[in-house]
Image (cartoon, rainbow, N blue to C red; front, side, top):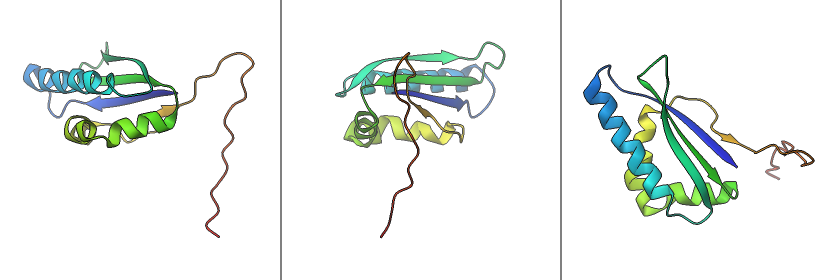
Length: 109
């Protein structure tokens, strides 16, 4: 699975960007130690320098969710989410010949 989370620096300027960058790099470092992590990158938008991305790849959605709910995830990754854009971030990787996930609402009853 692929997780693409975009972040907006809280204020314009070099200091805000440096602070967000350091946080994202630390978050990636922490996530990289978790089971199921396959890789990741931190990036900055070419046209809007206050827009950043944390992109990670995982064996499955459970691995990603467990990484976020770990002690280190709660301490170092989740606080950054205040700067995340409110948009879907989890994607399935589409490869030739694979069946895609089908949305199936959960039953409460």
